[in-house]
Structures are given as structure tokens and as C-alpha cells.
Image (cartoon, rainbow, N blue to C red; front, side, top):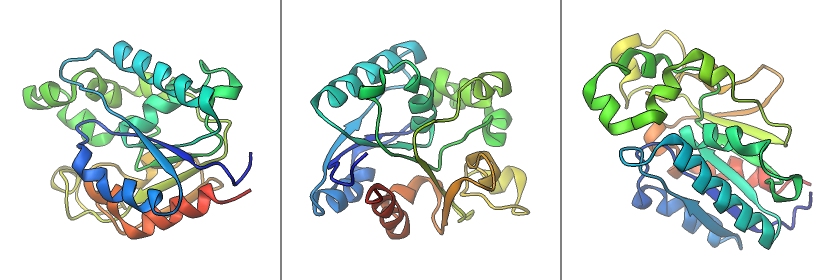
Amino acid sequence: MSSSTRQIVFIDGVGGKRYMRGKFVRYFEQRGYSVACFDYQVASQSLDEIKKNLSDFLSRIGNAGDYHAVGYSFGGVLLRSLNEQLAPPLRPRRIVLLASPLRAMRLARRLQDWKIYRFLTGECGQFAADDDLMNSVPLLDIPTAHIYGVWPWLGAFGVFFGFKFPHDGMVAADEALPSSQAHSVPVPASHAFIPLNDDALRAIEQWFGKV
């Protein structure tokens, strides 16, 4: 992997909006990167359809040259689920899992039977609540940084589970970290706004700039 890689793929989370990642795109374009974003509609697309579209998307990017990838929230789960299906030349060179759960989310388990949650998150929301399904998604054998938020004041997590351990309002820190040995960077940001957080952006830039 070379630090000359100048393409970044951003895989959004459930309910992600284009305007919410505008600062992310501008930040990296101003530093000479090209940014491609992957969108999906959880209310109208099955999980298999989303994964198929992402696989095609990453294959097109990979065929054009080296790239790095950011998997934000459930976007990181999607990225991990596809990594072994992609031929090695088509895989990202470096990855950031940004506020992305590695195991079933407490919040998702709490809300999984709520009709509004099921409507807004579709199959992805049910997947994030299932221990067996989340545990079946492999960790990555690609250099990966885990950047997560520790700003609990915006989001539903604190309402249901309180403030006794670090979280970003939706994902707990222990849900976003594989081990104490992993390359991890906590930042003072809530889940919804971590793609816009200056500390998170700098940490991503530093990780992608490593040789």
C-alpha cells in the first residue's frame, strides 16, 4: 500500500443523508482526494440487494485503482461483510470504521420490535440487533482504524441505558472496538455528527496518510 492512494470511498450508515457528509467530502477534496459515496435505502431495499450494489460499487472503484474506505455506522458492517467476497486487488488499501458496531448494539436490541424502528431501519436494523448475525461478520485483515464517539448527549442511548460507560448516543465504545490492541481513536462527537467532527476528520487523514 502506498500513501499516494488518493481515492476514498465513503459508505454511509442507515438513514445517512448527503448533506450531512458535505463537510467530509469538502475536507478531503481540498486535500487532493477524490471521494465517492455509496447510498442505500433501507426502507425499500433488502439487505442482499444493498450488499450486491455495494459489491458492484467497490469492484468498479477497485478496477480503476487503489482506494481507501470509510465505513460509517452500519456502513462499516456492510464493508466487513463483503471484504472476503472481493478479490484482493479490489479491496481497500486502508479502512476506517467510523462509529461502526462490531457486535450487536444494545440500542438496536432495545428498539428492534418498535414499528417505527423497523420501518426506518429495515433489515439492516434487525441485523444490528442480532448477536449471531453480527458475530458472523468477520473482522478485517486490512489495516483498520476504529474511530468512535464519546459524546453521549445527543442520541437515544443515554435515555435507555444512561451514562455509566462511554458512548456516542447510539453506539457504545465497547461495541465499536475489537480489542485494546486495535488502532483506535476516541473523539468528542455524537453519532450523527461524527463524519463532520474536526478531530475525526484529522484522525482519518492521518491514518490514510500512513505508509
